[in-house]
Length: 319
Image 1 (tube, rainbow, N blue to C red):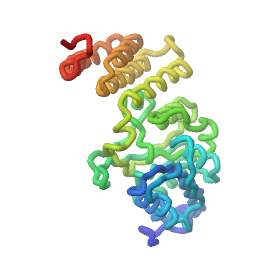
Image 2 (image 1 turned 45 degrees about the vertical axis):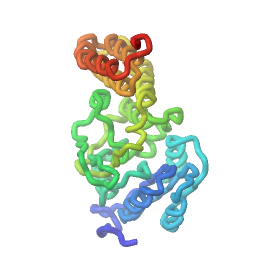
Image 3 (image 1 turned 90 degrees about the vertical axis):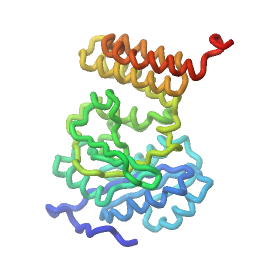
């Protein structure tokens, strides 16, 4: 394969490139995985460990992997316990100083790895490095740019998620934060990044003002199809984080407002999936944290409830 652009044998200051370990979890993504693989290999990064952990795909995924196996550090195709299990396996066995996770339907931007490593070393090897990302359609045509400058835990709670493929973690920090929660199907990255931002090491997080990845958004992705199940996991994660890390009721008004907004957003997600009862319950929790915020969110919420009932009235309203 021809590498896109020349990468020098050493960094700009003469130091050797630190090893990066990239893990790609996959299951039946044969239509996309070749682009993901090539986006990693064509970085031309001199000190790369690249692993593919496939969950026993039944499409042409394995055929594609075979095509590139001479450039892979390791790959396996066997039944696993899901995406979190696959990433955990790869990261736990990795030998790199920096860890990356690229889903099989996403791709890295050209020279992303060199850019993040230069920033990581310049910033004193922080616990986590993150950059901007482009959201694209299934054909990798961009339709939105996620700019992460000024990002914070509060921003996450207020609804701005981290662009997962544009986030890279120091191996020693992963050992401190712990593995992804394998009991989660939809909120695994949300929960992991929340834990990371709540860790004291978050003070060293470093932002790279560059697009590092392209993330596909299409009808079959988990974030588009999760509905009430996705909302349920997010709500449970928020409840757990509040109880374990945020100090219960004795907490600043700022964080109470942030949690109220986060729960209000999940109530809307429940409502969009047609689960009006759970939506109301979660909105009531938002009132517990910040009555003013929840009251403001309840105004459009009420209109949405009426709209849902008009479309599909419950049995007790029928007839």
